[in-house]
Length: 135
Image (cartoon, rainbow, N blue to C red):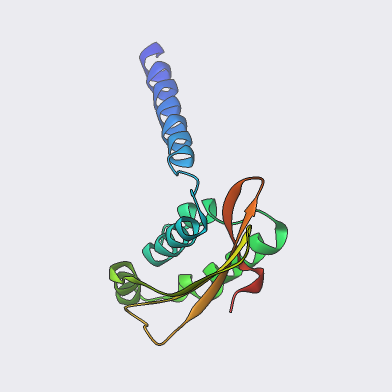
């Protein structure tokens, strides 16, 4: 009986520690280009936890990100997901608007005709992706 309870407690602690280590294993971006690249790579790879780490946390961005996952990413076939994961990021233009805002225009090698521009902002010294002006 005691061994079973001890095993359950140990398992719960191991799961909790693993979950916590995943959350802190991502490194904040050093600059706007790094934030954009990490967000895009994580999105292409289907690593939504990592992509969300580089996302500016506010209600609008959270809603847009969840909508994108529901309406687009979750509807991709397995083959499409593999193709996106294998795709290279193709930066087109990285343009500084000012010292805390950058527009990152890119495509990817799987859907090279699809161009996207994301806005990357520096808030409280941290570079993050702001999806509110996605185009």
